[in-house]
Length: 291
Image (cartoon, rainbow, N blue to C red):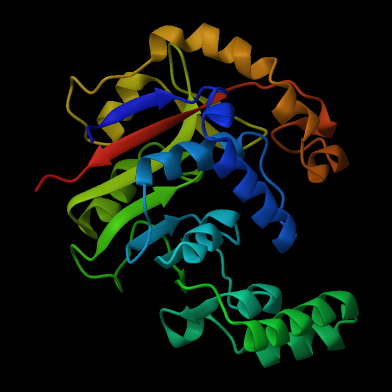
């Protein structure tokens, strides 16, 4: 595989239909919703990643998103990294997956979290979590493991050099200031083995980098991405198709008609009040660590 910069085409949805269906089923089962273009991001990353079994993979900027759980379903050991704390991770995830903190402070015991939910009157969530824990104990768990690591991506001090087979980042890195992004990339590169892959999706910009206020993320030109990710100058890109691909995205009925419910509840998001009107398009970056 070679390094590449690729604006994500909506054709990915049909080219990888079984994968898209698997992602939808998993998200529904976990009570998760997708960001408006995340199905494209997830599909592009997973198609490039290939077989995850037995691999050690970082999900950078993971939150509680579906990527880490999908990889654990496929038998990977997932380093779930996010600057936001997941110490109180819902028991509904712990019932299906082997989850532990990389450090003791990264994850509280499931029982303590459930008690807090009950005391806070969140009976339904606590009940769902308990049911998941019981089901997991009786029916077994996913073959992989998720290691929760609440840490800034610029300082992955608890992960040794050349430890991981891959790093994936689903629409997360663009939330870093541009001046910080090279440090983030360098730190993710440090923990990758020779031959390892960094697969990230961000926002694309045609002529000049710009900040999308609603989603609080930067959109980048191909030249900027080459620089920020320290890619070879001749790394190929498909920005010549920028307008064509953007038009296809704007008219993608599958993404438009399945817009997540949270978009309709606020004007302070990437698709205010649920009105389908994309302001940018996602782009994937593949960086290969030299042997």
